[in-house]
Length: 87
Image (cartoon, rainbow, N blue to C red):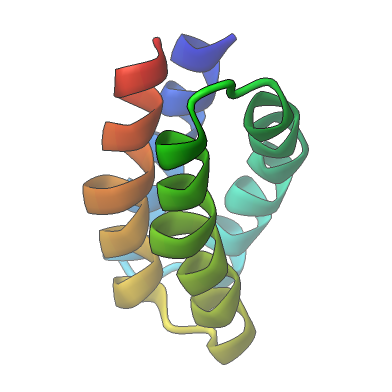
């Protein structure tokens, strides 16, 4: 499940880096329910806190602001590495 989400996030980041904000946002929105499901199953409170504070909260803010580059950076450099720790 984590591998599938990571692949979806990599696609979303690539789309966002290419400047297609709407398509990238749609791809990211599709991954959020699975990410939330993973987050609820994390037993390590440090990783869970990092996921929420360092990745998800800033990602939601970037999505609200439609900041494609920031969103792609957060996916690539914050969210995916945390998921890799879990997988």
